Image (tube, rainbow, N blue to C red; front, side, top):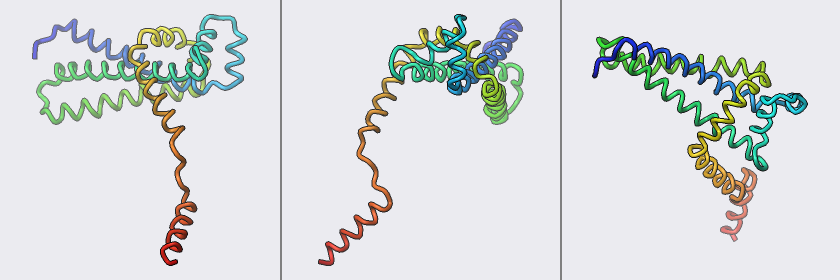
Length: 195
């Protein structure tokens, strides 16, 4: 492994912490946007500020039901990309700061330590906050998510198309038989065999 300069190490550490903050905001925005009730939406519609308009634009989107799908896909792609970058940077940092550790312990620390930090600070705490202040966080994240929706379109658009095709297939699938239908089918077929 090439030796990293102290400046690069601190840059990677700072970037990891900043990415954890980004992960927190993006993750919290999922709860914030999708828990906005009618009153919150009405408040956003009445407000004349750009952020409130961006919130409604993200939720309503270009067509029927497209806004929420596009928003969710954008959030998921962005959050996963940020979390992957955190993992990659933390791997480099662990290899530099703890080179003498046995490989199994290094992997254990990377998997459980970094996962714990991402889950706690990048998922759980932001979602608790977003649940208590959905409109506030949605307003903060509206413009960054609108920009991310445009930039990440090549990543989320195929996923949305696939999800739409799968949803259409599920909607047109024949209905499942209930337990009562199966029992009556078995009884009818057993009576037919007896006759």
